[in-house]
Length: 374
Ligand code: MRU
Image (cartoon, rainbow, N blue to C red; front, side, top):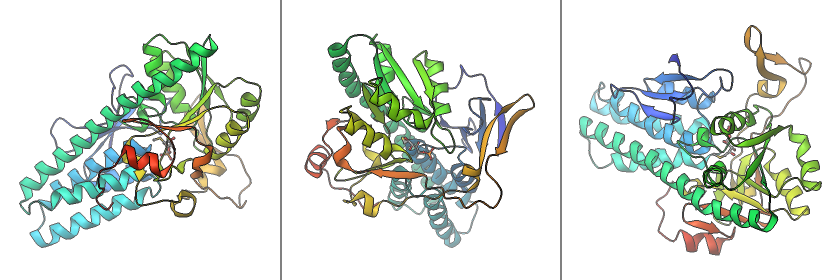
C-alpha cells in the first residue's frame, strides 16, 4: 500500500482505478480531517486489509471497493495456473466478504462479480468483465445517491416551508460521500437542499468509538453547509428542546420489512425522535436492502470490532495525530459496531426510487424484481 498526500480540492470521489489500470486508489479515511491522503492498493489482500482497518469505510464505499477488489483478484489470478486461479478467486471472494459482515453492499458487490465471472474461463475476458462490473457498481452508486438527494430534497423543502427559517437536520456517523462514491445517502438531501437555496443547518453527532462525525463535519465544511458538531450524549437534549426538525441517517443493511442496521447509537436517536414526534428517515440505495431477511433484529449480523477502538481515542497533537488510552488497562470492553432500529420507529426510507414506508408491502412494491441470492 503506498500513501500520497493530496490537496482537498482535487478529490471528488472515494475510490477510483489508477491510471495504469493495475491498482485501485482510495482516500485514507483514518487520516481525516487532519490530513487528506490516498492509498494505492495493488492486490485483493491489500483491498481487504484497507476495508477491515477502515482505510475505506461506509456501506456504499466498501461495496464499491469490494467490487474493485474482485477486479484486482482477476488480474492476480491471470498469473496463476487455471486450476489454482479458480480457487484463488473463491478465496478472494471469501476474504472480502469476511472483512465487514454487517454492511449488505459488500457481499452484494462480491456476489454480483462472481455471477458475472461465471460467463467465461478466459483470463483476459474475466479481467475485462470484472472491471466493467466494478465500474458499473460505482456508477450505480453515484446515480442512486443523486436520486436519493432529489427525493430527500422534497422532504426538507416541505418541512422548511412549514416552519420557516433554516431546517435543522440531525445525522449520525458518516453517511456522506465518503461513505459512498459521491453525494452520500443521508447527506444527499442536505447537499441538494443547500444547492437549491433551502436554508439548512446540520447537527453532526460525534459517533464514538471512531468519531465518524468528524468525517461528516469535514465534508459539510468543504461543501459550505452550516453545521454544528455535538457529542453523542447531547442528542436527546437537543431533540427534546425542539432544536431538531428532522433526523436523517444512513444504513448498513435493511431487512425487507424495513428494520435498519446502522452505526451503533442510531436506535437511541430513533427512540428519542419517536418520543418527541420528530420525523426519522433512513436514506439508502437499494444495494443496502437484504431482501432475504425479514426480521432485522433477529437476523442481521452485528460486527464486533477491536476493543482498542473503545479504550483509545485518536486526535491531533502538535506532533501530529496520536492515539490516547482513556480507560485503565485490563478494563472489560465490548464494541458492537452497529445496532438495529425497528421499522416502527422509522418515518420513511429515502431510496433512489423515492420515499417508501418501512413495511414489507411497500418495500417489495417499490422493488418488485426477483433478486438473485446474495
Ligand atoms: O464507519 P463504518 O463503516 O463502521 O460505519 C458504517 C457507516 O458508514 C454508517 O453506519 C453509516 O451511517 C451507513 S451509511 C453508508
